[in-house]
Amino acid sequence: MRIRSAVLIAAAATSLAGCFSLFPKSTPAQLYTFTVNTPAPTAEATRRFTVERLATSFAREAEGDQILTTDGDQAAYIAGARWAAPAAELFDKAEIVAFERSEGPVRLLRAGDVGAAALSLRLDVQTFEARYLSGPKAAPTVVVSVHAILVAPESRKVVGDEVFESRRPASDNRVSAIAAAFDDATTDVLSRIVDWTGREGASTGAAS
Image (tube, rainbow, N blue to C red):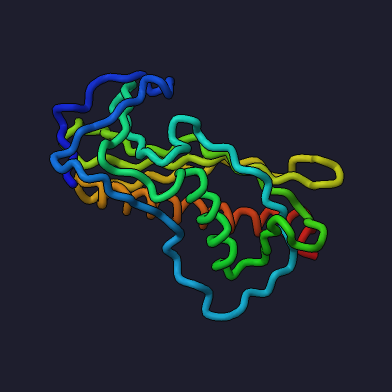
């Protein structure tokens, strides 16, 4: 599904109400998804400390099942294409998979898990969009930006605070290529967050 450049008309990127749809050449709706495309660990990872996963906040204009694009200060959704589930939900699942597949020291606690966590992790997905940096005819660049905060549960002291951003150019101005770039950018950001969480935990003594 190639996106037509002529219809990337203005809407304010800062307003959800201003986002509207692009009209591709083909009209049937198609569903896309993303996950973490790193391979599973070759052996069972040795977990040395646990982290509680707090609720993730997500950029309001991108959290639903529509695929957000921007061109300068204008925003649009891609018509005829949807995420298979809300982007915020897919990101949450990708975060869990990223920690499960990591060979690092962190085990992510989820709802219903037993045990006290050494640290709490909160993610704020600030940017999740495909940017047309070279005009609407060129392939866009997917930008995923996440603010990560690690907190000591007992003292509520912030022990880690970092912003992670990944930019992945789509190979073509087609929805399938754009979705693949979202996958790559999400994988990159979450992999770095997992590694950072392990390093910060070790530095605070959580892994001891």
